[in-house]
Amino acid sequence: MESPAVPVPLDPPEQPILENLIRIRDGLLLLKQDKSSYIKSRDVIPFYEQVIAEVEKLNNVRKDQGRRRPYNRLDYVLDDCFQLISLLFLTVGRNNEAPAVYSLATTVQVLLYSGFSPPLPISSADSPQRLLDHLEEAGFYSAKDLESITNTLKNMRQTLDRGRETYSPHLLKLLKSRLERCQSLLDKLHEELANLDPELAPTHETLVSVLRSTSAANTRSQFSASEVRSYQEQLKKIEATLKDGNFVGAEGTPLKGQELVKGLLERCWKWSELVLERQGKIDERFREPYERLVEIRNQLDRLSVTQAWSLRETDLFQYQRKLDRIDEARVDGNFVDALGQPADLHAQRTLLYLIRRSYAYIYALLISSEPVSEALLPIYNQLQTLRRCLVEVKESGGLNSIDNMRVDGKFYVGTDIPEGQASVNALLAECYDLVYDLRAALVEKEDGKQSETDA
Image (cartoon, rainbow, N blue to C red; front, side):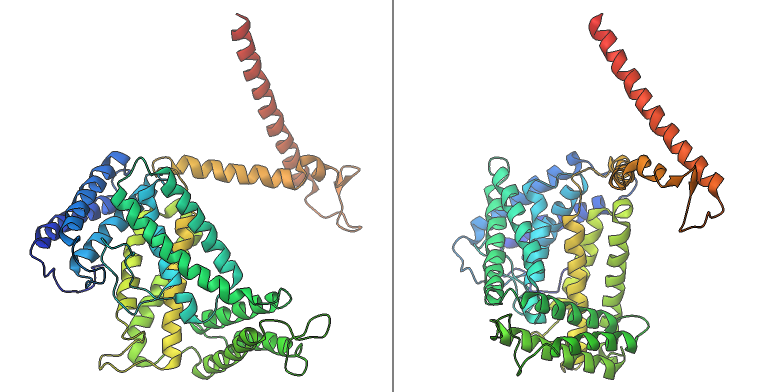
């Protein structure tokens, strides 16, 4: 969970700022780890104000320095502080306020970028960058991926606009710069898909799905060759649609975006063949990071299933930092062993897939976080469950539609009258009674209000 080992500040005036930020981070970590009581807004705001005060000092110290100065330990600790404050804002239900945007903006960056060069200083007009394009580096992304991130960026910009009069201009400048960086790369990715003919879009989506599914199969605890071969069957069906080596439209002419889709098809074949050859076994030199990444991915997967009942947003910080450490250990984009030798193609793509998949889980967990304090979450979740049940009854046509399935008081399946008629009819009657009781209680309540008004 520790920040990466980087040089201490070379500029002496930065040293006291670093010491203050370390103290603030320690306090934030203690607050995050305390599960004895609910976190409240009044617990978080003082830390936010302290961090902003240190940012003001730091900007004054660095105001005459170049924008591309080395990223040092102070920058990492400051990022830790902002990440923790952002997650704490989510925990107390203040999702629609500017500080809450920081963690999600960082996660979007991670999805769009993957790590070669060090981040820029926090005080620059650019956002901290430790990541280059994850989607582009991974070599596959779909219009659906970009649509989700586009909507997320739009919502984050609206949050910043609302906070213009409330929050520090230092924070707003930092977040605006980060969102502009994300938008710039997002525009580039949109542009690369813009030349894809609409008739080819479904094929492209299918190939992206096949590539991802093959990568997922490659990292299962029990490797299934038949599963990978089933994906190859999909590739064969796509290949069968080619005419004279091209994807053609209804008019019989080649569709736009040929090279993109054919290149992706070729990559799917090569990757599936390599996965079958390796049978889910990674190079032993990279087994340790592989096992760590699999465990992180699996833990986040479980969290995504039980999120409403078990997630405290600040818990995501430890996963973010573990992933950062593994990602930042790459050299020139490559995972390397203890001797500095790069990973082969299989290990490289496997590890990269696991990192990106884990970040994608974090992204999904953040955007689905509800603007409700953890103190109210138990009640909120119970109401959500009740609402889902009521909606299901409504969408299924309600009790009347079930009642109408009976013929002469019996439920038929084909021409048969299965056993258990009495139990099903008793349950249906109980449901009717509950609905009647609810309606009666509502009428009684309304009558009581009317009596008070008349009095």
